[in-house]
Length: 212
Length: 212
Image 1: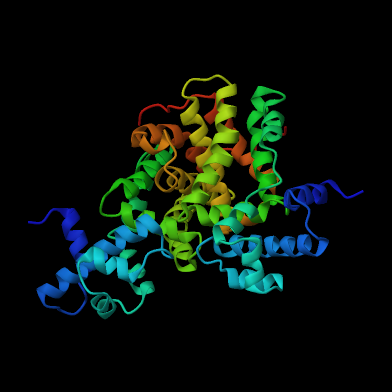
Image 2 (image 1 turned 135 degrees about the vertical axis):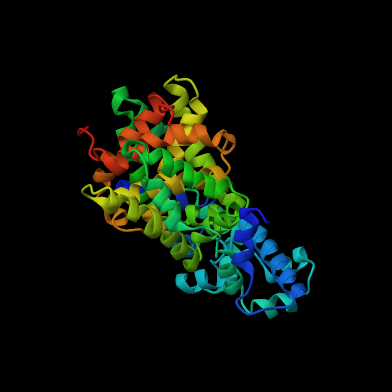
């Protein structure tokens, strides 16, 4: 039996209608190459030609599977990530450890080799490619953070969810995209410990500080 | 006498050797158009042709002043921003309000029409253009946050400065680049109040939370 990671990858990438095994394998190689390209360069600098070269196929074959670069990007971002499940996991358990579970789950999305490179590609593309910005807002803010802030029933739920996204997306930006040291090499659990009190306050604590 | 803002702009943009007034004005128009272009599109999508059109000049004239797009970008990012002064301002005063002054100063860099659009161009470019990533790291981390963390003499100063940068750059990303609401329209002082306790803890507080 295939390990869970492989099964998820398979489920994600097999087209709905049957293809010959060689076609599935080629499509998979193209998506893997595209994922690496978007993660390294972002959407604008990634090229069909370089993706084809990395996948070991002709650019025309890439266009056969994905007629436009937008379609390659959409396929790469069709992540094996179950937002409802993640949400349920974060919301289950002690309320005062909500943030520990959330930061840990967020980091695992980036550390997991099945989803991390695609997330980095999404982040690198979101500053100049509207589709990527929308996908990032939808994935992180609309499907995870807003439901969490809504579920815990505190005033200013939307601002709270935005503050959490500013902290988490900023962590991803500095750690994975800019690769600023030492935070780029810090252990995930050290970051969970450092960030969880911040995220917990944004979700359930006082938002206003004493005036300065 | 010109207001301070204008004086700073003038000092920034006048070339070292004298040019005829018409040339200075043209160069200024090109830099203003380039600033708008990088802020809206990021480095990769901005084009010399569109910058020339927006400045009302021929693309060849843009190339006369700036032979490459990299050189236009460098000139736009030569901001009228005095990092040493900002640093001194943040470090002066009560230590327990350090973060209030820092978050306020950081936000003013983005809200000021003299520096905000260039900062947004820098952020939009930093995910895929190495020069921009390096400039952002240098401006925010090396020239401001690391000296602050170093000056307050706490252990793990470098990790602390990275944590602050993750929070502040993340705020800029979500507010100015992704424009997620309601944080995109929040009053700066509401954000100072919400973020200052986080930044203060990263700078001077306990970094590790109780284990979960």
